Image (cartoon, rainbow, N blue to C red):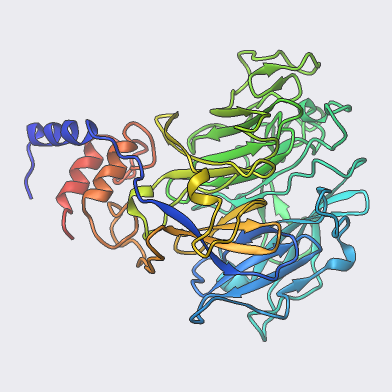
Length: 461
């Protein structure tokens, strides 16, 4: 198909003049019950048959998605309860907190967990059993460990950046209140950071290497080489947009403000998110940095400690499933304490399409109340789930009922929503990504007219 520039510009102008907010009414749908304090939902790369759920006490449970009604497998995938601390109380912030599967899990069987021990925070590597894919070997190795004087503010999000072998790990500031040791601004402290490492495959210590472009590599006397960014209080949760590698970090506040931080995929490391001198965009009066100084990166969204906002943010995920195409690129998050929930979309570094989701996400299709959102997660298809600390897992579906879809692998880079077709939805995504990376069809590092031409030349295929 031959296209002239006037046609492309005219089409882009016509479409960009419209609003692309997700309009599908949504509801949670109960998937399983009977879990003990679920803290994390994850899926293994390429595995469309199972979800993996962390229980705070130190176990990983499997949800079998192949049955007519999803089933919680009785035997844990992994049980390390004996070495995990703070596992029974709803109120404390310890336990099994993070899970990430190696990008090459199908061949190397490696996965990673973040948990608290007695006075420690730990990142550990485990492997799946060679004889049973639903059972992991209990003999793991601790890759990183550091002392923690207080029980709260442990962070715990771990995830691989899409398309890389780099594992990102969010840590809390060490606990108590107001970061009394100044950990978040201390580059030699493991606390209050986003770390970035590249795990090795098998073998003995060292269990990871440090990417050469980490921002503080080579400054061993003044900084930990694993630090990617800093100035965090208690990141709960962080996620990558699987379509473009953008990073979202939800950081729990002290007494006044909850915040969402955003880092585009192309951003260099070394960002300082401002804690403990800044809470949201408010000055705390504490030392360590200059409040709202030019060297700090401000959050893209905040809310106050009140009934309309909340008191403890739970970060979510960016929707990239195929059941609700108009929701593509929308980031969901919630507040654990107030039961409020929201969504937004980042376009050109700015928040757009901000929506309050309380009326949609507080009551499930079956009438169940969703009121203790501890985590979000996604399956291999990019469909989104909610963990309720009361023991339930919900799936976010259209309010009219669940739509089951199974997108094929994208054979064409113009298939931005991974539904197997090049059509108006892909065009919508590309135009909403204009001048960023998320619609980079021709892989030149930018979304522009060249990408639009490439997409339109594949139209209908």
